[in-house]
Length: 635
Ligand SMILES: Nc1ncnc2c1ncn2[C@@H]1O[C@H](COP(=O)(O)OP(=O)(O)OP(=O)(O)O)[C@@H](O)[C@H]1O
Image 1 (cartoon, rainbow, N blue to C red):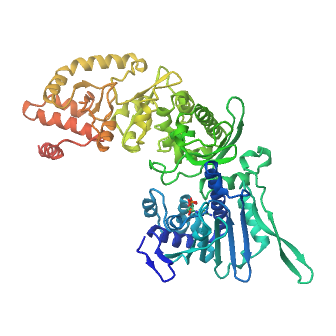
Image 2: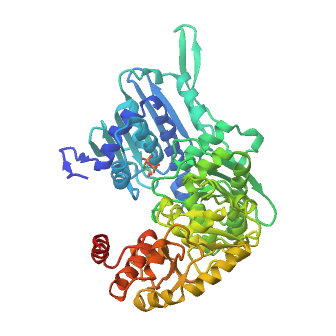
């Protein structure tokens, strides 16, 4: 924020935070086709302000000062060309107005803005995801006046905030008789459409019917003498004014669910799916949970808001109650309304509550059922879900042991069967395609899809027509350390341990392998001696077809891929020496058998270095590798 410049009447002019200026500029230009959303955003804020007051009044009933009938009101003035949205909610103090209406207090805001492309359509989507909130007023207004008084403050301590959305705003102290906030939009030219009772009601009904408080407008009646509709002195509700989640499913339309989702999630887009249930019995609660269509930009930000809104007996208690769902379901948005928790429940208390544990378990099951249903019946939606949230769902294999079986069925993988990096294969698909005698589910982990797909370790699998799952996401190694089995079949890395493909080898192959092992014993011993500081063991491979060599690690050791990831994250990874496997059928290896002592050391190093390179590792001494190669090329 820039420096304050107090003027004579103690009004203060302040600058918007740089990101607000950017947001305003982009919003006005990219959301113009969707301009009536300003009403949704302002009514949503007004309703939140009433929820907040009701919550604060649990401990401080005086804040209500006798005015307990909380509501939102919308009015318009044709002469002045203004629309006013007012509420008798919690209000804003001067400091709060400066802080909340001049900055964006969200972690990751800078990163978010750096992602904007300049392409209007894409940016509009992104901004929607970010949430436009109060600032959307400037889509239709060229001046906005906010008059507010914080509940509990005297009437002389009201605040007036005025801005034309160009970069600065002015705040001054005012006298305001009622608590709460009044936002007046001075409409831009050409926005007169909104100065109509009919138009405003139509937009309000569409966007705000789910709001649990009354949203009111002045009644209008036909005046015969004037020949026009005339406002009466009576306010009437435009919406149903009952909390949407308390209505029975049959009374709620899809459109209302969608609008409600936008209200709780601050998302712009429709949700992908939702589930709405009333749970009765030992624990009583209602859950209305949504899966967004797109991941928020801060899905991996530790400080990002997450979780669902908690209500107790229809009283709003808190948003982002992360204890109500496990962290791997942090993308779920919605409301949980408990009949059992005390109204004064705090975040700390939530952590220990047994009721909350029951809610979390019940809600997790509901979300998993919703995903199972989508995977079964709406495959395209599930593909969208997987692309956005698959990585997060994988975290569940480690976080939620109780549901690992259900989760494992929801996982999707890329595999050699598809010849593409599309993650579409289920473990059940894999099992149904397993070869006769195959008893394991094979996978390869790498830094990228191509790295895994072209890995030398896959050669024998390709030759035998055995499918291999290709994994390259950061979370995969962690997932694999928890997901050990599926359908009683072990998940096995193609790069770990000795491959036991014997059951699938025919007699001729077995005989050949034994003979070759015997024949190459002297070479193996020489290599082992030459590379003793860099490898744990050298052995004749049964997994190579086209490559001369590859590296593998022991069954219970960290894969090279995981070692690299840990090191990149600045963690200590034990230095595990790899096993070098050589391909006895490869011409290079056969040639090596006859190499004299002088250059043998170079050959041995090259064999190991190229195996490490193919595996995605960095060489300890790349220059030496290049020198050796050049030397051999010249010979
Ligand atoms: N009618 C109101 N009464 C009291 N405070 C309000 C009101 N409208 C806005 N505010 C305050 O201003 C803040 C900013 O509002 P804004 O709509 O920009 O963001 P938001 O509602 O927090 O989230 P989002 O940007 O996702 O909508 C709110 O969090 C709230 O503290």
